[in-house]
Length: 216
Image (cartoon, rainbow, N blue to C red; front, side, top):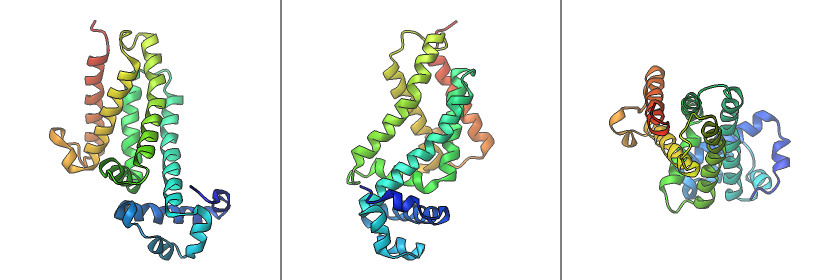
């Protein structure tokens, strides 16, 4: 756990960002076990003791990075939730897909850590971190789904929890396909230009529309 986050957060903003940037890059490149605190402090230009003063242990540093990443990812989703309440449910999901792509492109190292966590069984605290990702996704999606069911946009016979699982799975695979060529498959989403990505996101949400709404 973090030893003294307030001390770290009282540092100049630029120094905080440099520490987090270099630490995130190290974990993304080498994974948790092979990540080196020595390499991090050398690139940042601080004493090793200072890093341990802020975070206690390497685990504490990673825990802080993870929490910081979750907070960053919440911001664009909160913006979508708060500014699209008058929009069609599927338009909100489409915007959420594109916001996720934007976040991954802006923070590729954070997403790379997530993928390592997802596919490496020996990743420390894996169940805790992945469980938190899924809980955050549920917290975002479930109110959208229940509101759309109440308004008649979605079928009223849907199981909200199953709908959350379904949408979370689709969104997670969309991001993976956009980022990892081996996980792309037949839709050719990997590393596409913005126009193609938007077209694919729209196609996905239209397919969801046909499956989750009552036929007219």
